[in-house]
Image (cartoon, rainbow, N blue to C red; front, side, top):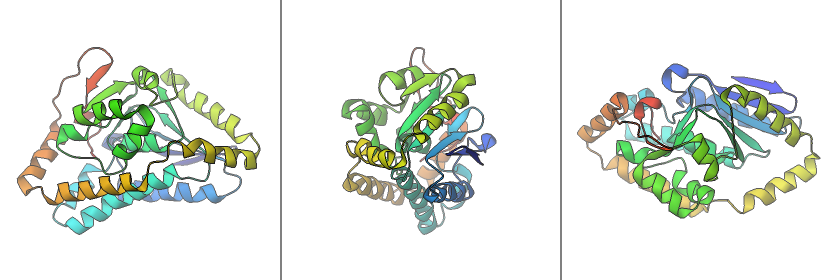
Length: 269
């Protein structure tokens, strides 16, 4: 769902019943959203989700249907990776309005954006390890540059998630606001950014991104690891992963930390 607000083009993933999962149809829509950044009247891109989830990553049901065809499964996951990389390299500034849970590929979409503003109810984490998987859309490449290598290893190896407050404290998001104020705050931020001189903004964007640009080798290593991991899994192992994603069952500890709960997203990647 695309909405134009001044010079900002907003995309909303509108599949709340499926954890705002990235199906092929959603990926196609987001690719079209990114295509429109070539319009000189579009100076900022904003991404958010509908309901309690920002995005849960790759669509579980579609991925399940592709398990018998490894080539198709890899193509599906490769498409998601290419989408995230395009977002990371978009020609205009990008803002994630994190309205809820962002795990797996949802976190990777957040990491790909230049700025992330989270509602207080948002929860963020990688979570792949909790369902026996590894990332494939850039988490291992981008996360160390966002929060530092020590905290990145912690999120990747434990599967824990952070509240919005801790995510802000650790530098994963730039700001936390009340949930009811999220859309207005992000719209105001987009308006401020879009109001700057376009040439200066473009050059500033290049400078701002340079320090946190993941090396191509990091992306390639992650992609190769995911392919090896998936190809090495037997059918019963894949079934166990799917069962874990569908049933969830881990408990939410008190405090700022929480374990990844598959039922929050119903997806992986």
